[in-house]
Image 1 (cartoon, helix red, strand yellow):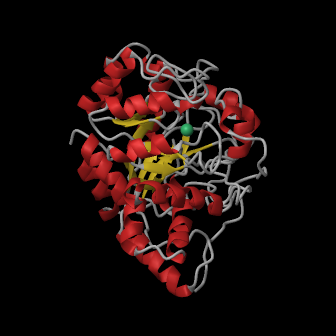
Image 2 (cartoon, protein in one colour; image 1 turned 90 degrees about the vertical axis):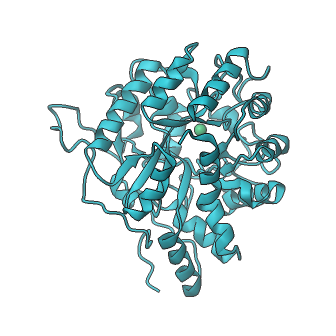
Image 3 (tube, protein in one colour; image 1 turned 120 degrees about the vertical axis):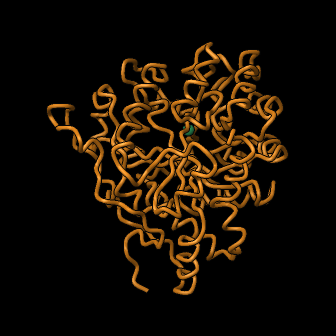
Length: 407
Ligand SMILES: [Zn+2]
């Protein structure tokens, strides 16, 4: 069959909308040249036979395709402009690329740790609220993407040719010592939150901390509040003890929505077997990360779809296919360049090992538009059944959301 770029049969009703087209460039905001949403790096199609491609397209057309972790913003083409661009507090969403991504539901993590509008340190309450408001205002001006507030919304997306965003934040740092801020964020559409990013906050210790004393008293209160509100709790960036405490404290399943297995690649950003097992034992799900230089393995020291899928298979073998999914954690723009620029701010160094082969980008899972068709191709080629693929690309995640959301 003819291999078109990012071909997939899960078409969305996209009318050509571009972010902030309702405003006037140069009058209402300063224009920066943004990275190409489509075609910034050569398109990569995981090689499969014609028969296998037919199965892949059938799955894309029929099943709910869910990414458990992305940042769908578009960075400036020149990443060195990133700090001044950020101070404007206005992020463009890659709608056109998303329309051909094959995705029905996306956990959208917004600026997150790069919310550096008024502060270089990020995570400030005002900056997070500013970011959410601007992005959601843009979303309200178009018809393809909408915020998922309830379980029904997750199923509605595919039926209506739309994409549902699950509002997500990777840390509770911005709530400081105010539990009610969790209610406020829920009101603004946030449905999943990490307890802590790589550095410690009021709730507990992040993966960078040498001394992880577990979930604090305030952290326990925040976990209870999130359980009551219906916010799905995530421990992707937590230290190991804080992660285990969170899983034990939460009355609902807890997720690891973007990580990999430390048994395959020994960095703190990867999860050890005991944390993965505890997460699964309480009904949680572990979604595999693909940000550059993260899910590498000894067998595949060059980060690509093979090393990424080795983390998937290892985790599935450890805890069962019902507890595994994918959270590639990609964006539109030069992700490696951004990592280099933000290295200190995002604790990238403590998340990576030195003895890996550096790449300019992760072939096949470089951005939110190309990952899932390639992941499904890999799964079909490696003999996974339609039933198992359906679980890992969607229903495992829906199960956890049904158990953790209010409605
Ligand atoms: Zn992250």
